[in-house]
Image (cartoon, rainbow, N blue to C red; front, side):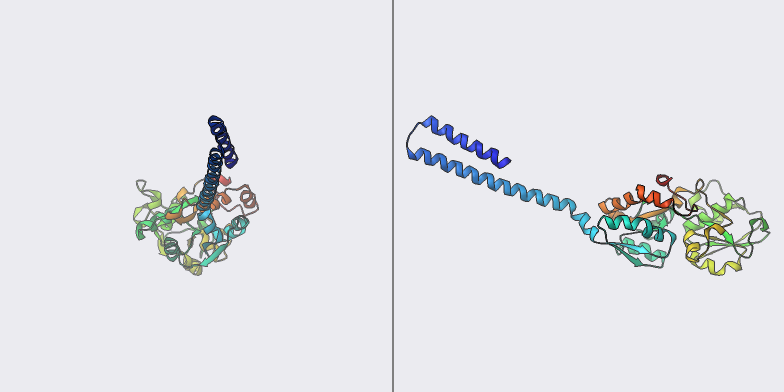
Length: 313
């Protein structure tokens, strides 16, 4: 359209010049025609340049998405949140053109280091409190970008299978990392088994912040993944959702657990990415998949033991 308008304008200009000078011979006519041809060549050149610029701009706009659309690497472990991602979210992303490549990383610290070094693009196996603690300890910039369905931390039977049987000096094991220590102590205080210092932030609880321990309970902190194998050595054990899941323990057998209403926002599992990439298009695509109506309907087919973020309720 641009070319047609400019070309017609050039012809009219030539005609006007010719009428002003009269029939002055072939020289004037040839000059007008030459001017018209030159104008047409200019229009063609401008049109080609404009088309090339538009193509380059379009390529720049899509280059980031297409790069990641070829492949997204994520940490894959047999955890409830990983399995949920693969069952409910992966199909949505694959239909949008993404290739999803799982990377097996068993250790939680190595998982976060791999993410910080771009060896993986994202994972769905940490909560915000843990990520904040890790960033502070390792000077990383990992970013929780969306809370996702979470299996609650719960207290499970060890040598005793009823909390009503708790006695003086009973031993309880719970995860040793800072964020899950706080989470375990919060659960115990919610159950009324201990009292915590009210002046301490709940996500920062440590054993030193216990102000009342009426049963004189003995606490053992250990690697959360090892607790299921030594359950019988303790009266009760506190398990993260992932530890119970990996050990094949039915969540419904928890004697008590975090509730939908009581769980702290920082203890909800998150979609976690390297902070450098948090505003990139592929991150938003994963967020959109979790917030989609399709995934909401999928969650309606799952166990009601899941704690759901607001957008899925």
